[in-house]
Length: 95
Image (cartoon, rainbow, N blue to C red):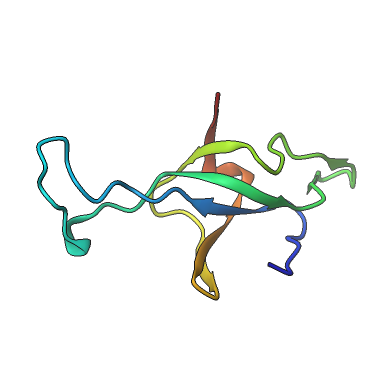
């Protein structure tokens, strides 16, 4: 991927959900929920405060994060799917 987010934007690759339940039932694509976890691929330079000071983002590439269900902008790069989020859309870094 040849892309670098600007400002407080973050590029996340959503985690693919399992296709089969624990009981062995296959979940069709129409019944799947949108993922809420992903891996940070790239981060922007940071958020600019009202006084002009730039604050670095708390997440970094490689972090696993939990984000809002319908947040961000989806886009594809070839067969890979990504989301562009702001730091406000991210709720937690998964340890």
